[in-house]
Image (tube, rainbow, N blue to C red):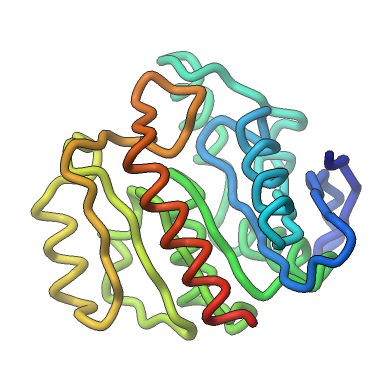
Length: 219
């Protein structure tokens, strides 16, 4: 459905972004990748949003370090992510996110895993977005004292060993006004149907909440 386009951030960096659009769509989202690049799964996510009325764009955030990253869901893929992540600053990531938003006119942002954390950064460190949905962002806990500039919702798996119940509780305590959904039987990455941790029921609930949230705040 979609296609890759080349964008340029405000600092001159050129990078790819996957764009999925359908005629008649009036709302747009930035979709922020997991730790494994703008792979087939993330492209599918964009296509699904486009089919639901939201044009979607997924910036290749790792292009600043290594272009065309599509890592496997295994230890090697995770190790590759950590190597890349060490060379990326929050400021650089947000420049690319904002360039993607500007290219599509997007006012919503949704992200998964690494992208869940980036979604929180975008909501708290910029004023570009009108709504943000963060799925199992492992870095949100460390940045929980930040104040969002738009409505935010969060989704976590109750069996996620990377994001503990205590961390989720601390986020909820710090932000009692933010809807924080915990899916008790779900693990990290429960929304990715290319991973062993995929949980169809939790995904369906979280996706329905995400779509409703964006329709409420972006319409």
